Length: 242
Image 1 (tube, rainbow, N blue to C red):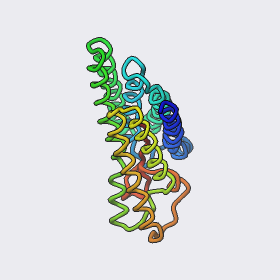
Image 2: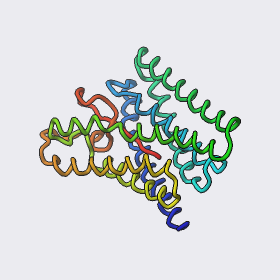
Image 3: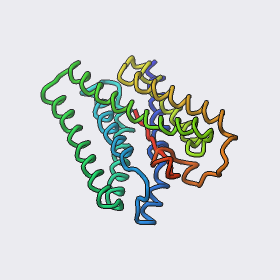
Image 4: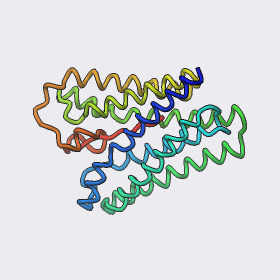
């Protein structure tokens, strides 16, 4: 059981890393053009919060036997921080202020959860607070593609829902879901069970509508999802962690 637990944790790390690195093409474009164009920075900020909370939850003094949760989400937090900072540098003034404010909010929320859990709570109380916080924002992160799924159904086209990203959402959610089952951890089971189901739904939609799109996706669209507003012909992002 312990070996399987470790194996599925490694799988979860690998698949989550693919998701975290998927936006690099978009950020290369942003740096090259020195503009964020119509891309939205909000998904990156929310993913950063999820990574920070999940990394904290996986630490041994919060929840034992979940160190693999901390390794990938700690890595994800570094990657998402870079994305957010790049977005702040190249975004227009109004968007810069908004994302900077959200970034400060994320750091504040994480600091409050970390400090309260560290100094005011112990044992099960500490695990409960950190687990609930991580679960809520993991579900928020996994739920971010819901709008693009609605667009797929409405337009009968998978133009803005790339197959491989949907596949990795499914594989990542499934790996962590099984990891949570083997470790009997509801704070990992619940959000990743949701992610697994959402990824499966995306794949079903892809196979239903894959031959109905009329426009050939750009290289960025074929890799990434969830970055911007579909009605402005840009991608929509979700990165997933735990």
